[in-house]
Each structure stands twice: as C-alpha cells, then as structure tokens.
Length: 354
Image 1: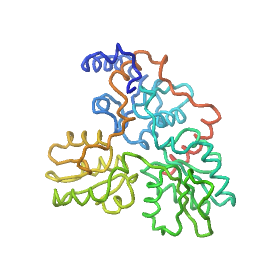
Image 2: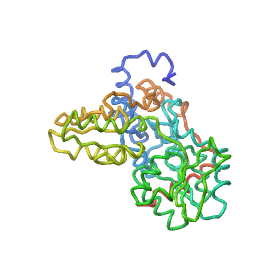
Image 3: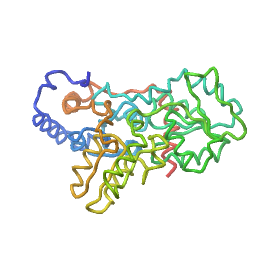
Image 4: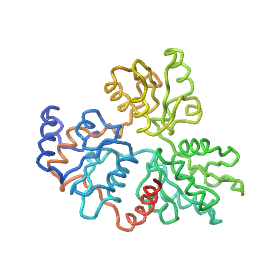
C-alpha cells in the first residue's frame, strides 16, 4: 500500500538504495532535478537537489531551464503543478503514485461547479484555490479569472482579488482562508462558509460578504488544539510556539508565530541557542529540524508525536531508486492539455504576485 516500487526494490537495504540513487544522479547530471518537499522522510530530503515548501518548489519548477527530467518527491497535486509550469519537452515524475492529498480530494469538480452557480451569480466573486488542489480546480480558477495561492502568499492573493471584485470564494482549506481573512482585519460577519455536504441550504450572500470559504481541512494541522499550547507553556516556560496557518483559528491566534513551512524553518533557524520551540506542523519536518538544530530544543506541539502526513510518508528510497532506474517508463505525471493551459493561467498569476 505504501510503495509503488516492486518488491525487489522494497527488499533492498537502505544503504544499497542510497548508493544506487546517487549513482543515477551522477550519471544523469544536469538532465535530472529532484524537487523535495520539507515533509518528506529525512533520507529522501537529503537526496534532493532542491528542498522547500510548495510555493518555492513551484517557482523552481517554472524556472528550471536545464533538466530534462523533474522528479518530485511530494504528493500528486505538487507534481501536477510542476507538470503544468514546466516546458513541454520536460517530463515530471512522482516516485509514489499513491501519494495523494485528502484536502485536495475535498473539492470535487461537480461540487465546485454547483457551488459556483449558487453563490457567484452576480459576477462580483473571484475564485482563489490553495495550491493543495487538483489540476482541474486550478483550471476552473484560471477560467474564472482567479489565481492559486500557497500559505506563503495567501494574503497577497486576497489583495489581488479584492482589487478586481467584491468578494473571494476560497477553496479548499477553510482554516487557511479564515486565518488569512482574520489577519487582514476582515470581521466574521463578512465571512461565510459553504459546506458542499449541505449545498441545498447555502449560506446567505449579501453585499457585506467578502469571503466565502469552502469547508475543507488538513487532518494533520487540525489535530492541534488550544489545550496543547496551554500544556506546552506549562511544561516549557518561555517556549516559542510556531504553527502553520492550516491550523484551526484558536490555535493560530494563541501561537507566538504563524507561517508557511518555509517560515517555520526560518523561525527555528533564527531563535537563539538554548531556545525551546514547539511546532504545530507535520512530524517529519519537526524531527528533521530537531536534528538540524541540536543547540535548541525542538518539539512537536501536541506532545503526542502524531501529526504525520501519511501521503508524504509514502515515498521511500525504494520508490525513488525504482523511478530513477526506469526514468521515462514509469510514474510520469501527465495533465490534459486543456486543463493544463487553464491551470497555468492561475499558477502564473500566483507567481506574478512577487
């Protein structure tokens, strides 16, 4: 279930797989680029050429000039975005095709198009989708004059949209959308939530409504609760708590700092030696930061060691070695041409924000 590589690869020793991957990388040279998300296993991160969050890796995919082969160690929507942004003569591969995203699956296109017809009929709404969405939703957003955002640039995306229309319809993460709106000073009485499970009774949209939030969430980040912050501060007086904006509002508003995955990495880096930092995000990153900063105490916020993104964890050394050995023959990510063209519009609008 967790591997796409054949058993013969799964049964090989880790050191053997690492050596094989390094040999393939050396052989392919500049023809190959391995993009690696921060949430990947430590051993995968250390073999990547470029490591970052979804925004940084999307930009790197768009800027890649030399590589013929782009191997994306992440989840499906990330590899799709790379395929959309890179050149036609480049190929993109996902080492484990089972690596999906439950949040992305929470916004199926039949529900999205129905919702749009219900609440966006006055022509005063711009759609914004979080990067954590399928190519089809990115294409829908592009076709309707909107753009994509990440947790790094969500506020800029909202500002872009408000310069063009009265309100934003934000997919699919309710918490990121709410936390972004709250950070911009938008009051709760101007924010409504569309629950696709109850589309027969949609929220009331008035002239005052500025934000419509799709009811989706990340199961990793919603595992953090306000009581975790209370217990952490009792356990470690003076602790600094930093969380991801996909966390619930009560957690975000009680934390010392909030930001994207890259923001969290930089936050830990900037704390003085001897600091204790509790982090509300994915466990693989927290564990790697604890290793990278031995002069600091880096702990997981809930104190339970449970916020693991199973889909990010699916990619193994066996998957990466198998993909590199049969490069061009397996695990290639393809996107329908019409969807690709429309989705590229929404992604390029995002990249133009900076």
